[in-house]
Amino acid sequence: MTLRMYNTLTKQKEEFKPIDDGKVSMYVCGITVYDDIHMGHARHMIVFDMIVRYLRFKGYRVMHATNFTDVDDKIINRANEAGIPPLQLSATYIDRYFREAEALGVKRADRYPKASEFIDQIVEMIKSIMKAGYAYRAEDGSVYFAMDKVKDYGQLSGMKIDELMSGTRVEADESKHNPADFALWKSAKPGEISWPSPWGEGRPGWHIECSAMCRELFGDTLDIHGGGNDLIFPHHENEILQSWAVTGKKLANYWLHNGMLEVQDAKMSKSLKNFFTVRQVLEVHTKEELRFYFLNTHYRGPIGYSDAALLEAAASLKRLHNTYAALVAAKSNASGTDDAQELVEKARTDFIAQMDDDFNSRAAIAVIFDLVREINRLLAEGKLSASGVRKVLTFLEEIDQVLGILPSASNGQEDLDGVIQIMIEVRKELRKRKAYDLADMIRDKLAAVGIQLEDSAEGAKWKRV
Image (cartoon, rainbow, N blue to C red):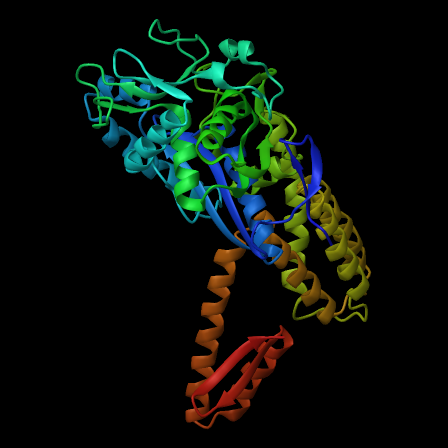
């Protein structure tokens, strides 16, 4: 099956063809770390976690980087209010980010570059942009990208340069040649955190950090660049300009953007004060419920946030969890003859087909519920065999590597492995005492639930069958 994804750059679904066969380079714009993460951040994190998981499920070797903006006006202002250095403030919230990402079941990226750690690369890239004639130094030592040099602005958004003024993070400044010019390097204000540069003490602008990080980590062009669709304009548009000015090449071949979490038709954000923190919501709902809530909508569409929507998602997920629990309980006592082979094969084919269609997790979850309805019928009628139970469980746990919605699947598996090892040790002791009937009973009981023991010179080994 062919993986296709919607490319914001071309406005259509395209077959995914990585630069290097079997490998994927992926950069996802992260957060500005000046406060706790909210549910809008959670959607973004879970969406790209799902995408990375599925790419790995498909067999790709993924190099995934997500950045932290740890130097920013908001960080500086909040740090001044708290009376602590800006990097100390951002480090505190980065630590909280990792704790809450883990609480959401979000797997760690391979790299988490921070703006403060890429100053040298940022300075070198700005020098290259200036050498190419696309930037200039202002009187105060700031460096700006010259928008009047650009002929094809708006590749992602379709926006025109004069519309840039209505975008975010655009500052009016008399030192600019053009009001739409944006800062690559900001000269330091008295008492502000800064680094040395050829243009004087200062710090990076917002857009340049991502261009510099992408080039340092992945070279001139990467496979996938991701982020929320609120970043398309102007942030990602400006990234494209900066990188092209240096390399003359595309920054990324595929651009993926998730839709926003909305409260009363407005984007959830700290600036609008309409946000709910992940910590608050996790006091009421499990991580599996939150993942299901987000993944049961296509990643590119908006989601309306409400307590009722979360409760509805939790109730739907409960039905899946109930079936999963019934299957676990039936592993040792199922007596039917239907091994569910065709049902599982069809479900697996359909699941992959839906996920291959632009990571359509909503349709993929519908496939799971179709299977669950049939399995519940077989269980109720006593038709499902022990072999069938194991096949369904194996399938559900396999695809949960992508979704992460089964009840604490990984932790439960680790606990089960520990119990099996204890049983093997007990059996070993029974054999020493020549209580072979009890030792054989343990072996047979484990075999009945799909755990096969193999005695060897090094001791008993086990595997699932």
